[in-house]
Amino acid sequence: MSHDSSLILIIVVGIGLAFVLGTLANRLRISPLVGYLLAGVAVGPFTPGFVADQSLAPQLAEIGVILLMFGVGLHFSVKDLLKVWGTVVPGAIVQIAVATLLGLGLARLLGWSMPAGFVFGLALSVASTVVLMRALQERRLMETERGHVVVGWLVVQDLLMVVVLVLLPPIAGILWPPAGRAAASLDIGGLAATLGLTLCKVATFILLMLIIGRRVIPLILHHVAHTGSRELFRLAVLSLALGVAFAAAELFGVSFALGAFVAGMTLSESELSQAAAEETLPLRDAFAVLFFVSVGMLFNPVVLVEAPWPVLGALAIVLVGNPCVAMLAVRWLPHPPGTPIVLAVGLAQIGEFSFILADLGIGLGILSERARDLILATAILSIMLNPILFAGLSRWRARAAPETVAASAAEERLATTTLTGHAVLVGYGRVGRIVVPGLLQREWKLLVIEDGGDAVEQLRAQPVEVIAGNAANGEVIAAANIAQAKLLLVAIPNAFEAGQIVQQARAANPALDIVARAHFDAEVDHLTQHGANSVIMGEREIARSMLEHGAAQRESVP
Image (cartoon, rainbow, N blue to C red):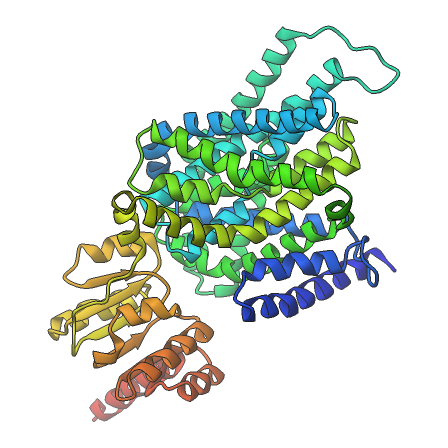
């Protein structure tokens, strides 16, 4: 099979099988991520049947990580990062150091060498950005202070891993040379120069993005937005996200993920940040799925049978060691209420950098293939167990010390509004910003549902109630007291998501007056079938206004 057809086949089979198994996992009330991982195992070389090209899947998955981190950066400003810097830097360093020592101890018990144990311990110390970001988004924690600490912790982990990836090859070449070549003396000056150069590159990249990129990127997007073409705007966003990530890796030695995160962060304060996040979301989700499929492809299930105790030992470090160390470390540092529990559970899994470290260790002759299988087994099992741990550990903490989690529980729980006979607006974008003052002028009691952090902050300064979240979520729509509302205005541009909102609202209140927006005739039919009383298509309203204006001009002609 040709290279090109292999690429097409892995996308078709990977996404198709991930959809089937992800849907099955969802029906069984477990995380769809489990289905995606099992899809990778099914098409991997260690199970019978079709075997996908293992060289292509990780590259496709890397695009997903880039887009995901770009989206995270869009919701995380420089000010947010600086606020938590004093907590996340010492905390992440301590957590990684202790986890590495625990992994080293396990490796020595297994009879591995010191360098193998060191790399193995590092691989067990770094959480998966993809998994943790999804967990925070699902629990509406991205915009909270606790969420900022967790994201900042991940950024510090990524920075430390960038340094490790740069320094490990020269250190390995000096201290642990390949078989047949004697170890050279340690060049302290050379290592210091290498470390200083790496830190200078990272600092230079970040400064350039904050000083120059902060002005240039929004300027480019504003120029493209003025063309009126959504396709060009979408391409501009993707080009900037991928281009900056690639340039960061090639020119500054920064990881793709960190480069994309900084690119998104420089755009976060622009008015176009929300639009940029919406445009990259579909591709972000698709490539994130391929990431999990690619991880599953590398896993050899035989390790679970041949080495169960080492797997359990590594899993204990990830599920118990990392959370406990993180909780203890953050307790001695300034942090918002409820941060230790969220951080502990969030770090109880490993992912992208663990796989990169494992591959690097094998390439340097430090790790064996069996060690990589052990790391992959730990990653897959921890990712599968993480959602359960999130739910179970939170309940345990609530029973054990309810006074310490009261603030965090209140933050996560959505209180139902006391408004009745009110209007509910979903979305505070270009349409919503025009609708809000009009409704307030007409003295409507107004509640707005919005999931963009900047938009939520702007709304809180106005005389309206605000619910931060996705209205397609049943808990969010219920908190808006739709059952006793009079009017629902769905102003978001995504017709599929709008259809879900309309359907839930109609079921909750059959007498509710529902107005939605659409771009095409098919979207009008879709929203009407789901229960909308009226669907306004922008193009039709523009045409109607033009005709009315033309008719008025015609009548004024003598």
